[in-house]
Amino acid sequence: MVELTLLRRGHPLAVPAKQCRVLASGDELPTFERVLSAEGLSPLRATGIFVLQVNVGRLCNQTCHHCHVDAGPDRRESMSRETAEACIRALAASDIQTLDITGGAPEMNPHFRYLVEEARRLNCHVIDRCNLTILTAPGFDYLPVFLASNQVEIVASLPCYLEENCDRQRGDGVFQRSIHSLKLLNELGYGRAGSDLQLTLVYNPVGAMLPPSQETLEADFRRELASRYGIEFTRLYTITNMPISRFLDDLLVSGKFDEYMHTLVAAFNPAAVEGLMCRTMISVDWQGRLYDCDFNQMLELPLNAAAPATIQEFNLSQLLYRQIATGRHCFGCTAGAGSSCRGSVLKTQPGKA
Image: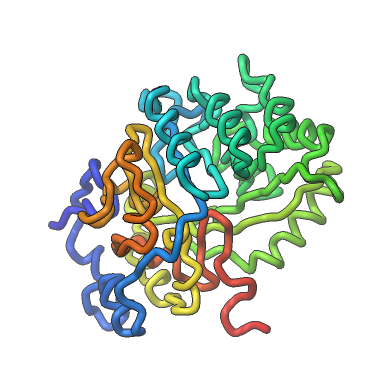
């Protein structure tokens, strides 16, 4: 037996060793670093920091099957005001252009408004990674107007334009509540042609597969949401499901872990490495600890020892060109057209013009 502690830090899962052997040849799954070295791309280093991504906690009004944060209504992890203030100080002391706020449902953190307003005072672009249903939840109905007045980009998860598929991943009734929220946002100008209010939708595959072409799927979403509900949006991102946390549990229970890892490794695309999100961002957890990306954060895979460990110790010069910590989950970001918090890394699918 082996424990998948590198894929589910803090929640070790004992599984048969054969489930960790995924190559057709029967060889052991290669490390991400080994594959990078074979392509002459090692060590993986940051190229700058343009985004400060802040995970303000794991409290959420939903419990989604694919959630790599393992968020839900019963979680109590929540960023303090002191840590939120340290994040703003880091922005003020640097030329980082974007504050990307995530969770859980980030809006449920009591200091969400503070982060948005202070970052906007610094002329930062602010992103709210929103699950849509929070916008009409009791006590949060102020959010649409608040977000619009601060010109916050909304990046919203909507795994399908079909109700059955969406609810299967995110819970019964979520689709209709999401459609209601999208209509409210459209009424405020979000996603409309010529509007500065950006509404980005995010697609995650429903199941153990890579996402399809981002461009093709965006066209499908645009056509179907407009014809069925009169909804407009700015763009669509496709993001690969990462084999960690709750999605890993599903893979193991369904017996598809082996197959999915083989899919990720076989689809490794060296062209995607240049645009990996970890190379241009830094991630902060609810306690203020620093990571190379949100996925490393969930696995508690810390920064290189030479780099500052917390946002309170933030030092831009020591973080700019740091060596990035990697693991086998990184194959999820380099499969096919690549995957990042900004969607596909490459504009076209491999092998297509």
